[in-house]
View 1 (spheres, rainbow, N blue to C red):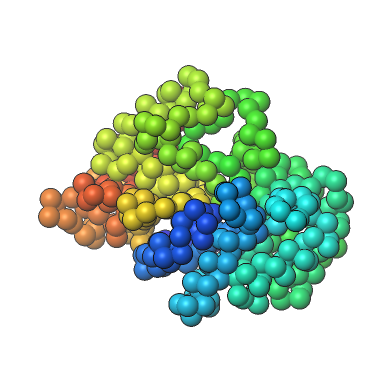
View 2: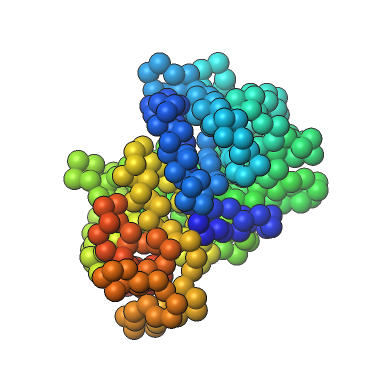
Length: 363
């Protein structure tokens, strides 16, 4: 699977991050293991969990996602070959919301035990806690890094100015900095002033900030709970309007042109954006996993020519050293267009991405 640099860490992570939100709770252990195995077999190694997952499901209290992920790593003896992210900050039974120093330290210890590991690769502040001084929060996170219990720090559900304030404080004290931000982000743009409560959507300010400061953006809810492809899933009111209508028309056109599903095009659009965005993909069955994995090639086209031609407004077709299927269509290592069901291949995943970016800028 293609990899993407994680901020300024020098670490490369999988372009598709597997969110294990419902593994070990809504999705049973056996199927969770199977889906994680499939992701790893496809070259993926980046897993995303949190201490609270998923306490809102009846019969569960939180921590189950980390627990099944830890059991799977122990059973597969693969901890050194995977990159694990978890989070702290939201409330769950027995734990208050917040990022006070004591909470951060205690919750990290719990996550380490559930994950059956001595270090978390990426540890997020899951929500911005404005009742606790940033200095207290950041010093506590830095202490975990210095103790070797956490390698890198991330933020989630922060506004850009708060992210910059945190960076300035960390630099002033020589503390570890947030290297990435995980935010609500998808192809459709929310209406101006739209609110999602605790979930903060990536806006123009944040997108500009991460591009200029080399902070990696990870996108949660990139497919809006299936609304792009499922007739029984409606788009939330915050996305409804002429702008979304125009963008959806572009998405349908690109999907039809390439033979890729709308979901695959969205994932590819994120991965091939400049700078790239890492989508948190979800998969609750084999069909979803197949579709998701089909959106991310194992390598880029040799010369990037297709993206350049598409950016220039010229349709172009894939050439060079691409492998070709029985139908003669070029394909790049199972990239976009490898539909769940095998229909069609995109001549170059970069072509679809460039097309959607080009058309989107015109609406």
